[in-house]
Image 1 (cartoon, rainbow, N blue to C red):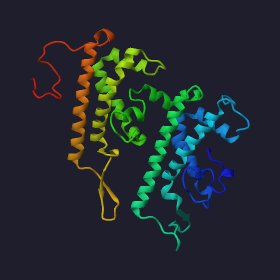
Image 2: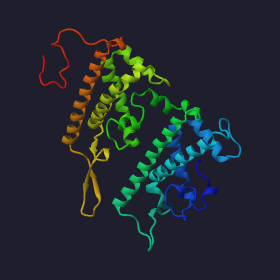
Image 3: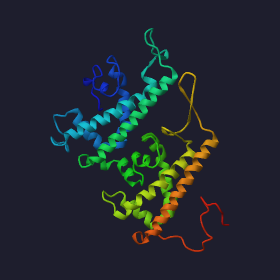
Image 4: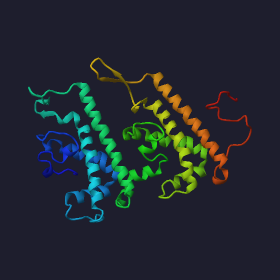
Length: 335
């Protein structure tokens, strides 16, 4: 576990990241820390890197394989990033249980004359804060690992690294640069399966099998071919918008000034917010709008490939009668 009981007698280590009371018992949250490590940290960085980091954290005086006097400061930084994510996700996942008393008489809420429970809107805000801070910290952690991959080569054995490298939009930052999701890893994870669908059905169909296979082969390399690197931005733009369109139809997503949400927010007289599902028409409008933009970007991709045919010989542009075409995004329809 990446927090030590001996360093948290008065929650000293944890209070570096969240303003928890020094009177809090570490034992009350240790089970949630362990489950958060299993659910979030280990799947992201892989068991091999986690084991290495844990060994160094547990006994820093005895450096494990791969940790040296020259690079141990980077492991110290990684542990700080991991702890920040871990404690926020611990309080997020254990939020409904930490202040609950369980005994033979059932379940009870802790309360006293001097301390009262939060209002519902306050609970929602605090829980949402833990969730967002936790997932944002995971992004920071992953970005740090990737920028120092020579120090953390065990990360390359993780399933997460392999899947991210195989995606044309490999991370939250790349997606957010095209479509505002408020840099939210939570949203990126929700949309990721739709990114895969658009790759398989739309991007692959336009590129053709041979060129699509070449793109997927090159993007996992440390130094992809220069022509494929030039093609990637033209692939990412339609991919992002069409993934949002698919997600809007299937998940129900809403775009606000804070990024993408799965429900609408309405203000109340108590200056709080009430969440409610979007209407079918709102889902439909968002899906249609993003699909239209995505298809327009597909046309730009097609034009780029035609204009640079010599650089992409595997691409075969559609031929035949000019009356045979895809009617999407067109003002007229050929039948």
